[in-house]
Structures are given as C-alpha cells and as structure tokens.
Image (tube, rainbow, N blue to C red; front, side, top):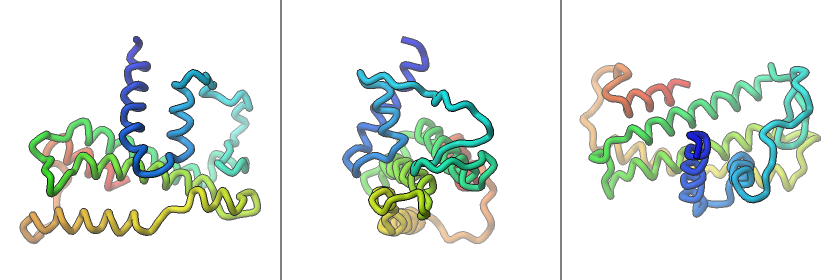
Length: 177
C-alpha cells in the first residue's frame, strides 16, 4: 500500500468513529465513496477558469470570500487533526476526554463547511438548507467543555504565549486561523 492509501484508510477509520454523531456532511461522504467500490474521480474535468462550485451547485469566482471561509475552516480542522495525533496520552481522562472532544470538533467543522458551502439563496432548496443546518447545541457543548477544562486551571493573570508543547502549539495555531 502506498502512503496515500494508508492515510486514506486511517481517515476512513476516523470517519467511522464519528459516524455515530449524525449523518456525515458532504465532504466525508465523498471520501467514503471515493474509497468504496464505487470509484469516483477526485477531479471534475470542468476546467479551472477561476470558478468553483458550492454544495448547492452555484458557480462562484474562486476569489469569493466564501472560499476563503471554507479554506480557513479546512485549515483549522487540519491543525486540530495534527494536535490529535500529537496529543499526549496522559492528557486524556474520563472527566476530560480531550481526544473525543477534538474529534467531535473536527466533525462539527466539516458540518460548518457544508453550511458555508450552502448559502441561503435562490440556488439552495429548503431541503438542502435544512440538511446543512448547524445546530446551536454544538456551540453550547463546546462552551460546556471549555468551562469544564477552565475549572481545572488556575485563574488567568496574564496573556498566554502560544506554545507549551507540540499538541498545545498546534491547538494555538488552530485557534488563531
């Protein structure tokens, strides 16, 4: 197996771990189909011409801010993935399952990307808008996790300089994108 195949196999294992949360967004379903028996292409054959398609089929210039938002979301997700890979085993506990929380955040970022790629306009059907709706409970869950982790730390008295170790540094990068 090539390193690409091994990487994709690991990604599919990661996706299957997240599947219990809810149906996966478009990108994840694409990757799963890509590595299933139904072989699809990773290119569109539509040519570049400076345009790209959104989830709703609308074509926009690649300079549109929506693609900047999608790229930033993807970049954040990638850095969180690197942080998960660098996560020290002794930083995971039953009370603070940081590994599971980070995987959940990654999954929710894929949902955010689907939502961004489906603007509420004449190109998006109501069914498609509902399919990519981002539930406010996700934000509440994240705030709850932050509060729980914060309760185990001494009160902040200064700004925090990014760093502290590989995992922490990668999470700082994720936060700053």
